Image 1 (cartoon, rainbow, N blue to C red):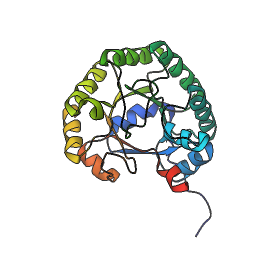
Image 2 (cartoon, rainbow, N blue to C red):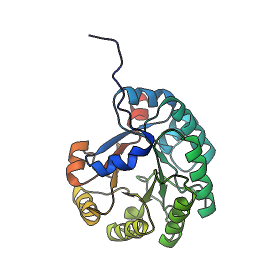
Image 3 (spheres, one colour):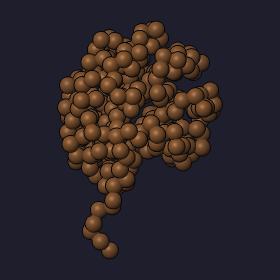
Length: 254
């Protein structure tokens, strides 16, 4: 028996896109500070998810109802990058404003995460946003969201910075409308699609079948949420490329 930590499974700056093309699901635990980013890296994870909800819980002691600012996310991101070179998937909420704000957000996050892979997640809720598994959400028009995606693509300094487009339309407009929105976001140039709060495994199969071979899909496993909690291997079999567990760590600690 040894006290030596496990060798981290490092992924270089330019390989996040390549990793997704290689196939197999990528598991990203939710982290909210440098200590737990380091622990997750030592545990052998390939990527990390900087959860806005977890920042709200751990830093503000508040629920995920749009209280976290871009400055708090960027500050946390920079401290994570100082401790780990693993790819970071960052919850950027709505982009913290309109298309111009999105551009500023992307530039700030790229700067904070320099030296490692980065994916920036944007969603189509109005501000202030709410957790994707809470009721009472409202959406911006699909055209406004596609404008934000294009703004993010224009603002990024590196093509290796991935833009993840999330739609919360399932709870507001229904599954078909959510899939149509995701299609529009893909056509706008999104690198990864995130269809939030799907209610059943059948809905999950419907979503992955529609975008099979067209774009990687991200699954969100939220304890107590609206989506069935499934192990990563089963999600891979359904057709997902990424799975995040955004609140598991902070909930366990609490």
